Image (cartoon, rainbow, N blue to C red; front, top):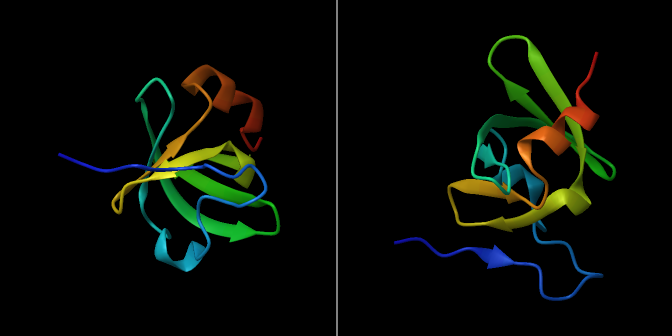
Length: 85
């Protein structure tokens, strides 16, 4: 059993302390494992998938955090729009 903290106030971010989610696993809204958070700056955070894929994702794409995984409000295919080339 797990609990997900969801965004209830659109002006308030889901994650207030990004240092607590560094190296946490990230899942897309279609439950795909998309990698781990490796950094954050400003309104974006970076996900590393494997040894070579990185995504720079807006913090507004975070839907929830259950203490061990971060959940996105975008699908895996939508995540490709944020791939760092």
